[in-house]
Length: 384
Image (cartoon, rainbow, N blue to C red; front, side, top):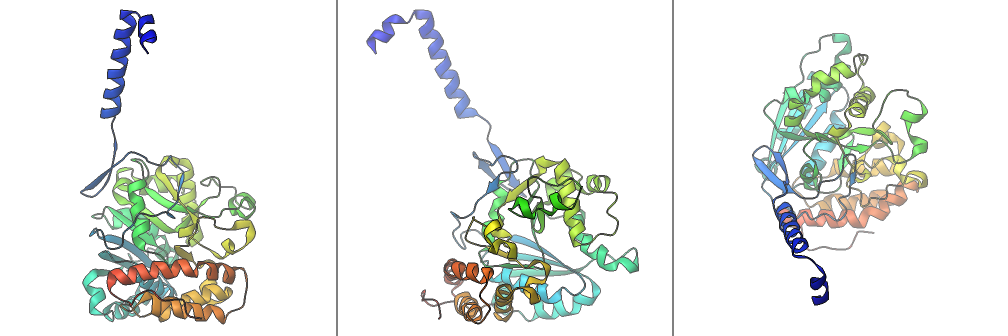
């Protein structure tokens, strides 16, 4: 070291010192990203690049550690009431934080939903605040269902006093704490406004490549059944106006066309999309080897295309088990153990194999929620 010093001129030494001081100042004072939802802001030094998938497998979530209210929104149209009630039940069951439920429903579903909400046990009503709101009346009575479905696209203006929401489709069943997906808001950078899962993980099953010519979020498109929506940013970006300008031809809106509209919009505004992984959008196609969801464990099951109703025995078993679960009771004893028995009675196929593989993970998640909510006795083995 002494030899090195002897070879440096006084001028070089001065330059070196100035460089070290400048570097130290830059590192210490470099601006950090502030991620804000409402009044609460977090500094985040490591924000994922636009479009990067964020894994929640190694979650740091501690059940019940936060008092932040989670706001979830459901849109219930046509014959979706039974599916919606199971989706709502799963969100309540797999959460311990204060929960605000906003349920937008058409007239034919209002009475049934109201009756179920009023039947919840007192322990649930203390933590969960439910609001049942009618969807705006249709401008065209012949297209009432289509206009009801399209409300998903206009939540920023409909919920003008709310900062952020988790939109949940009626075909979703949670099998992991909702707090974990809500926490992803704090992983968004300052431009990302909507979080979505990929439509698929297989290039061979990408319908946007096979059949459609419209733009989509590359490489696989995105799915619209579970959305993290920063409504404040969407309003500031004038999302609804820009969406209408981007997709003027989508006049007869169906569920698939809502998804098409979001794909077109974010293909042209890619800085606004944040993608999370298939573990929050586990579908029947993920049960087979060419589209396996490698980001386990599964956190939300998506029963697309009537998988819950009649198409897939394993999905039907899961949906039936959650439907029969009673809110306020132990998830381990009231949901996981009946699910284990129901799976044992179903036809053995790819989804059955995958669900059995995930039962141990689901049991652990259920036990964690139970212990925080004081719903259960100590962890026991799975029922045979």
